[in-house]
Structures are given as structure tokens and as C-alpha cells.
Amino acid sequence: MSRAQQPSRRTVLAAAVVAAVASGTMPASAATASAPAGTGTSAAPGRPVDYHAWTSYRDWRGGTAEGVRAVPGRRPGAEIGAAAGRTDYTDPHTGRTATWEYATWTSPVHRLAVPATEVIASWNAHTPEGTWLQVELCGTYSDGTDTPWYVMGRWAAGDQDIKRTSVDDQTDGKSTIWTDTFSIDDASTGLRLASYRLRLTLYRTPGTRLTPTVWRLGAMGSDIPDRFTVPASAPALSRELAVPRYSQEIHKGQYPEYDNGGEAWCSPTSSQMIIEYWGGRLTPEQLSWVDPSYADPQVDHAARYTYDNQYEGCGNWPFNAAYAATFDGIQGVVTRLTSLTDVETLVAAGIPAITSQSFLKTELTGAGYGTSGHLMTVIGFTADGDVIANDPASPSDDAVRRVYLRREFENIWLRTKRYDATGKVRSGTGGVCYLYFPARPTARQRKALAAVGVC
Image (cartoon, rainbow, N blue to C red; front, side, top):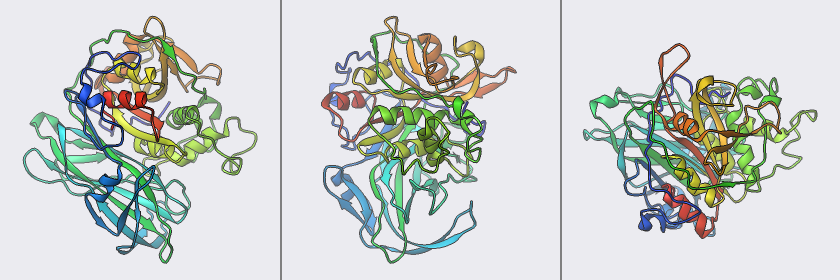
């Protein structure tokens, strides 16, 4: 299975039912659906999830820059223009101290359409050797006080300069960072995060002209009451996408330094499936470090390059989305969807989804296992509306394609509370989803993404 849901990570998030959008037709809110991807617009009206991103040249020219410049073009971005200063960084996982030049960009304040109990940031970037980046979040609570600047991730595409890492022990007594998730400590008090800013710090080797380039920086916030069951959605689509199939189980024992080997690699295995669906390929040179006797070496590669050295796992959600975006022409975001109707909207436009869920063996017919946290790829729906999933927790690549009952799947994915095998109450994922899609989506894909609140 996966370590993507440890007991310390709280996931109390949004799940609701929206109007059906089948076969690429427009959702109820035509204004939101018609907004093009990449404009930085906010969530669809009435949705309990607010995903907001900065992606355009105009976006990058806004905010506050210290040494960061906006770069126009087909894929606008932010990069180091002139370093704002130098700083030393001691890598907590190697003990190595190095000096880096840096520049920063701080977003304008984004006022959440849904005052949030949880926020997850995600980003898409290129970090050549000798560079890395840090993403931070600072917000204002509904009581008018401010959070500190929280580190949401220190990231590089490679692992030769720094060890990719989340940062533990960040709290102010009102909120806490759980690996990759900002969470209000006690939602029952009514306290919420009303707004936030994101700060991007870009680092490079001193005296060089190297620079990271960031194309997308965003965050998803949401707030929904706890629940053990969710309303059922009505089937509206029968379609299956041709997504490659990879098993995590055939990698058991391989590279145990990355979260004990393949048995915990559901997240990178799912990511690799969709990356290849969109045409992402690794070169023989990139895969040369993998034992040539191993099948599907690209899965080993995905595990290594999504690994969070603090979390000690490959299930860091933003790190998976960032990994997907290292492939040419692919974007990745972490958000939450509100029903299987949302997934139908995406699949109708050719976009599969990676979902995160936890369940007992008896709660998902045909799975044959239970899990405290597992990622799988939804690739379509049967004529009866049941879910067609590429489930990496399968004994072989050929066995990866599964059909799961719609009602069971929807509930285990969207609920925020569940019972474990001992009867104790545990958290559910509340509809967590990775969405990977083209850097230049078609008009139909833009409409589908907008319909589920992704700009």
C-alpha cells in the first residue's frame, strides 16, 4: 500500500455533489466553465473547494519580487533575474552546509472563497542541477491574526544538490503543517484560514547564471464537516481511457531506501501511469541507475524522484505533482474533487485522475486488501457507472485494471471519517486527487478543468 496517509496527517476536506457534466458538456456555472486554464481565476461558485494558481505572465509580474523576473512566452514563468542575496543551508538529511544565491517572489493575497480548515500547495517547475526551490505559506485567520511563514516544501527535481523534504514541527498553536498539509488544529472552534500568500524562494549555485523556472504555483483550500458517508452520484458516462498499467507489487524489495521498496509505491506508480498516458518518457540515460534486471524501471525512477526524505515516503502529494510536471508538456496539481461526477467530467475530456482513499478489506469489493492510505488511477466508467481503476496494488501489470462498485468507491474516497479494523475512528482523505494534464490543454479540456475548479 502507501504511506500517503499516516495517522499524523489530518485530512478533513471537502466532499459534495454538483450537477452532472457528461461527455464534455458545460456545468451549471457557464461563467466559471468558460474561464481558460492558466488565468489565475478562483474556484467555481458554490464548490466547497478553492483552488487558486499563479501561472500567467501577468500573474508573475504581480506580487512582490526580490530578484525574480517574469518570463513571457508559450509557458510563462518566474526565474532568477539578479540574486537578492546569499544564504547558507544545512541539509538536515546529509548534514552538508552549502552557500546559495537566492531570489524571492511573494504572491498577492488570495482571499479564500471557502475559508479553509486545510490548505495544500503545489507547484510545477524546472530545477537544473545546481538549483532548488522552497515554497512557503502565510495566512490570515478568520479572527484577524496571522500565521507564521510555514514551509510547504523544499524541492528539487534531482537529489544531488539537496534532499527533497517536507519540514516537521511547524505550529503556532492554532494550525500545524502535517507533511504537505496546512491544518487548523481545532476546527470545532470555528477558526478558519480566510486568506493566504505564497512565497517562492529560488536558489542557485553562487556565481552562476543557473536558475529554476516556475510555471505554476497554487494552493487548494477547503472546509467541510466530518462525515462517514457521502451522497451517491448518478452515473452519466461510459468511457475508458487507454492508460498504461503498472504494478507496484512487482517492485517489492527494490531500493528499500525509498520507503521500503515497491510495496509502498502506489503514489509514484500511479503518477507514472498517467505521465506516460500523456506521452512522458524517460531516456535510457535517465534510467541507467536502475538494476537492468528490474521490470518497469520507470517506476523505480518515479519512486526515487518523488521521495520525501523527512516523511520517509513517496506519498507527498505536491512532490508527485511536481515530478509529473518535470516531463515536457505536462502540468500537475493537487486538489480535491466533490463526487464521481467530477471525475466523469474529466474522463469525458480525456483526463484521468489519481485518487487517494483508505478502507477496510470488506469496504471495497474485489480489492482483496485493506489500507490506511492508497493511491490508484481512475481511467473510466462502465456502462453501469462503476469505476474502472488502474490499481497498482495488483500482483502483475496485467492484473492492474480493476472494476470497483461505484457506491463503494465514491464513499471510501470522499468521506472524511472512517472506522479501522479495531473500531477506532480514523480520518479519510475527503476527495484528494492529483490531476495531470497538458501544458496547453484543448478547449474541451480547459472547460472540464474549470468545471472542477482548476484554473
